[in-house]
Image (tube, rainbow, N blue to C red):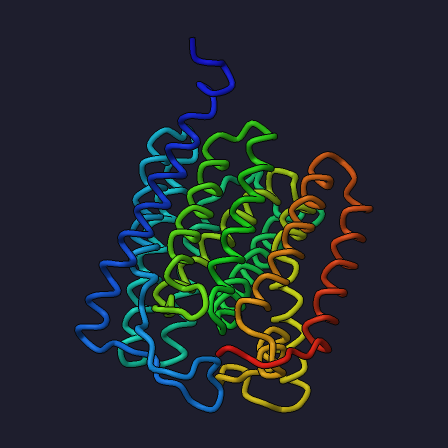
Length: 341
């Protein structure tokens, strides 16, 4: 006789396995095409890689993830229309971002696509869905949500600068959201988070240092959009503290770095190597070492997010701030004995 706990978890395990294997196999197939067509990222003075590397492996990850979410969405009552809008908008962003990977398109077109993708979903939310829990009037709540979501899309793209970092961060946030939603009884939201983590791990197989393929904007932009959506949903459902804690390292590194560049009068949209994780690599830490350090901190953030979901919001937020402060200090000061870039 099958134990009840095993019966309950078998469907979840199946979702994870299918999403993981889909991204793993799909990325391998896409990698062959990218190599054959010589779609490569060439290193320059700002790069953290030393040899031309296939660019655009995120195509497989995004395709598998959107397919999985579409199947999950079929079983979601009530807000199915909003979820389909999210999937359609993510597909739109993937198309625009792929065009950018291939030849570059104007910043205004990219930014307009981000705003359109965010606006179409926010405008379809029910009137009682407040990101700031009713503190702001609806119009201001939507505006603030839109600004934060667009910023998250862009910062996620900015932070994809060394081997393994985007896949590891996506897996950590996705797994944290899965646990929180599972505890709260949100079956669809938990599966969204789980499949996000699983596909990221499938891609990470190919992107771990030394990376055989890069996400490209076609991967990082839709991933930032979909992660932003799940974090927004969690905040609307009352889990605003976990939604802030889980991505706190990315938020801190990107926001501090961009702020510094703004103060210095630099053009923030230009490629650079000033993020904390990039500076750590340039001081001699390997890509893999930096990502492991970030993963260790993210593991702590997941635990703190669960504590916040259980009601200890203030203590969890303080702990998260301390964790990220320590992480940034380590990345800023630790010197390696030689990079394996």
